Amino acid sequence: MVVLNKIYTKTGDKGETALGDGSRVAKTSSRVEAYGTVDELNSIVGIAVFHAEGKIREQLQTIQNDLFDLGADLCVPETQNVKAEYPPLRMVKSQIERLESEIDQVNKDLSPLRSFVLPGGTLLASYLHQCRTVARRAERLTVGLTKQESINPDTIKYLNRLSDWFFVMARVTNNNGKDDILWIPGASRKK
Image 1 (spheres, rainbow, N blue to C red):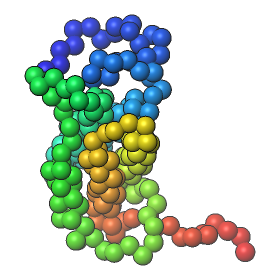
Image 2 (image 1 turned 180 degrees about the vertical axis):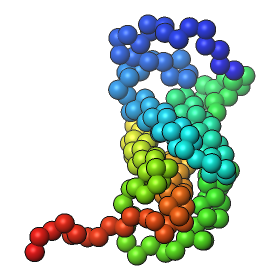
Image 3 (image 1 turned 180 degrees about the horizontal axis):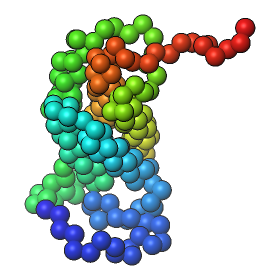
């Protein structure tokens, strides 16, 4: 359980922060960059929630909770010295499978793409595209972290699937893809 009595602690004033296991690292470390970007993504998802309704709103709220789980996973290094009383929260396969199921359910009603989709359309679709790009950045940073430390591989799988989820849902909110803005290669070139 988290209890926050005081918001500022001054412990980070010299450019370091505490990880979930109590160790201290630079705020510029790969681990902090990865979970910080997950936090950024969660903020943008919050804006999308504001503009969403019904089932997609509920799904986005579930994703926000998942993203806190993901941040918790990334902020606790994988070590052998885990206290049994407080095991670290780790992403699990069922969270990935839920995203896959939701993608499959709505994608079957979308027309196949004949061009790349430009980010935009409805306001909600625009925010979902922004979520997609930040999810991809979080994924790249998390993959980069794997070059330095061992992490839960389900974090990367979840982020990979999540960016696909945002893409498909952006199409759904663009009138099931009918109002997607398609890329026209070279459209602004002068002959």
